Length: 213
Figure 1 (cartoon, helix red, strand yellow):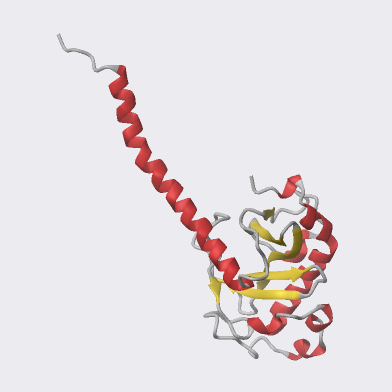
Figure 2 (cartoon, one colour):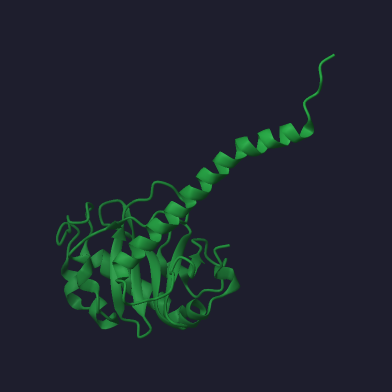
């Protein structure tokens, strides 16, 4: 008669087979978190904030009316994305917002813009098209000398008449590996600024509806 295998042996076998899968998934998630953290710090610089912006991330849903936010459509989001709060000590000094614009060439571009508490632009970057729809691990920044020129601008700069004279085939920045127009980006950034000004307290103080969890 065949002796049945002890239950303890089966439990050990299950644990041994599941552990590598869990370890790999945990390691992959940690790598994605570190990738986004590194991207944000390279965008902002290491001396502007002393908190972890990934820990203080806020979820901005693409579906209108699902959160306690004023005019989220100003961000033009096509999918749920994260915003990031930057602090010095306990004081919030900037908020990094996601926004999306039509690139003028039958496509869309995802961008990030960081505003300080006065509403001035700290930094702005174009993001590469994500390989997946996860919230974490998709902040691949496309470096552009032209995008850096937005730093320090306020609302009056984004609305300046010179942007209006740029046609879709002019002022194209090839440094980012994609075609974008200053007019489209400036308009999207101005709308993002309106969103920031309308939701400043909600973003700074946090809200249960903005929790990524």
